[in-house]
Length: 249
Image (cartoon, rainbow, N blue to C red; front, side, top):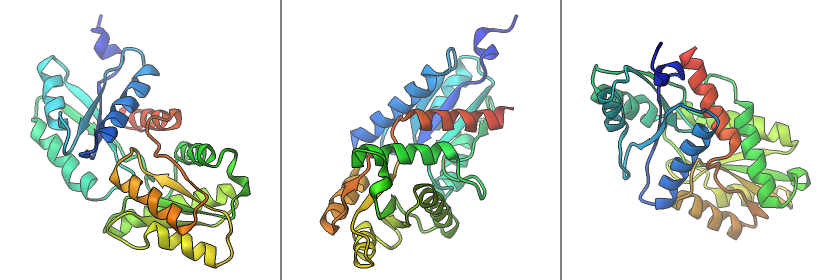
């Protein structure tokens, strides 16, 4: 009979960007627990590319040292930009040849589609911020971290289009860094165009200075509500599982 850890599937290593803000690391740990709670017997381990230990290569080498020959690595990223294209492959290479690593898609759009669970999580957070279902809004701004990668920005635009279509209101993109427009300007333009009730949906996986800045700027510009990051929502945990199942099939 195979050992139990082989019967339940290879370990899952979640890889977050990392932040100096301790709230971000705790959000990653909470998501790892949420995924593990729905997957009895499956090891789900958090790691970070920067600022917080352990890194993904260290976690993978540790798994190999205790007898695991395979692992699945999930980039906790919402766009497939520099960190997915460069940092993640470098971490897998640094882990060595003793363990086979399959890397999933990021949690944002894979190809042209947008995962329904991701949209459901954004909607849940927006409803929490507005106090009810967001049907009374005139417009929404989807606030993302930002990237210089045009393909990654296009993927954020696809999320905004799908999210706005589901809500039945215009949804515009804003960025906390690296690209315009910033959230205050996006909110102000929508209000100037006649939208009285504008809310901000947070396209962030964890809290930190970017989300703090988005909240302050959006409120100053007249937003009626600013949603919290996705953190460890059940919809996000389910999305992680779907990403793992796709590469493990």
